[in-house]
Image (cartoon, rainbow, N blue to C red; front, side):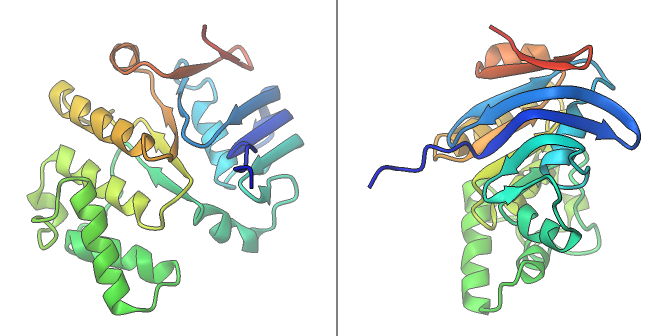
Length: 226
């Protein structure tokens, strides 16, 4: 049996809007399993709006859009949580729950996404923390970790449900250069396991150091940088 060749993310002649304002017209974009793709462009150009459309936060106003098995045009509100379970999302500001341990942050996500078996939950938490190099830090509170460790925790959280797609919105934006390089190496290690990654960034120095496919948003269009 042939492996599935269909893209993880696909837009065809799609219109991307932010409220009443059209940000991009006729977006054509494909991201396949195992691809690492940068989404670059100036602040306010529409990079984050594309990501919000992929997560279902922004409704697709025209054209064709699909993420996994979910069609974005006419996506119902009750479908959005299930769409988001197929992806992991990493934010610039980590968005950890500061009043509970790292393990409890991850446990919260598993419970929220339907996990019931406690033994399986504990095993998955350990696996995710080990993957990001934090297997001995699970008992700590977020404020007891460095910025890089907090972002590694956020990456572990994003990986819990073994998503086919990771969305990383400026994941190194709040980190110093050395720590940012550590996060990039981790993301590329994850990508090599077959997980597709779409990373929003304006840090072209990092893009140069870690080459991959580059999409640039400018003047209402999204084009591939050759």
